[in-house]
Image (cartoon, rainbow, N blue to C red; front, side, top):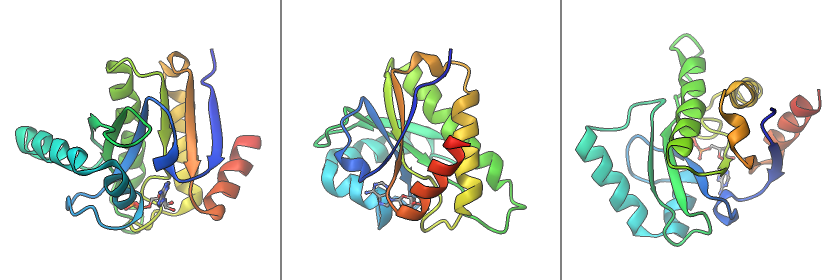
Length: 172
Ligand code: ADP
C-alpha cells in the first residue's frame, strides 16, 4: 500500500495533526526559523520537556529524534530532530538528513500517531541544497516500510521556492 503524502505551503505551527516535526537546533537556543516558531507558539513546556529528555539521554545527535508534548499548538505532539548542517556534501549530510526522516517516522509509529507533518529540514539556516533535500525527504518517506500505517504524511513548505521544488518532484 502507498503512503498518503500531501503537500501544502503553510506555517507548520498552524497544522492540526497528531504530530509536527521540528527542525531542532542543536544549541537548544530556539533561535529563528521553524524551531523558534514552534517554541514561541507552543509555549515553554515544550522546551522544558526537550531539555529534560536531552539531559537524561545525554543529548540528541544529528539525525536522531525525540518526542515532546505539543502543548499550546494544535498538534498533540512535536518530534524534534536535529538536521545536518550543510558543509559541502562530504560530511555524510545526505545520510544524516535521511536519518532525520526515518527516525521521526519510527518514533511516530512507536507512539501510535497516525498523522504527521514535516518541515523542510536543514534547508534554512543549515543551508542544505533545497532540491537535494526535497529528493531525500520524498524518497525516504516513500520507502519507509510502515508508511501505509499513517492516515497522512504532510509535507509543509514555508517558502515558495521549496513548495515549487516539492510540487515538481511529486508530480514527476
Ligand atoms: P534548519 O536549521 O534545519 O535549516 P530552519 O528553521 O532554518 O531550520 O529552516 C528549515 C525550513 O523551515 C526552511 O525551509 C524554512 O523556510 C522553514 N520554516 C521556517 N519557519 C517555518 C514555519 N513556521 N513553518 C514551516 N516551515 C518553516
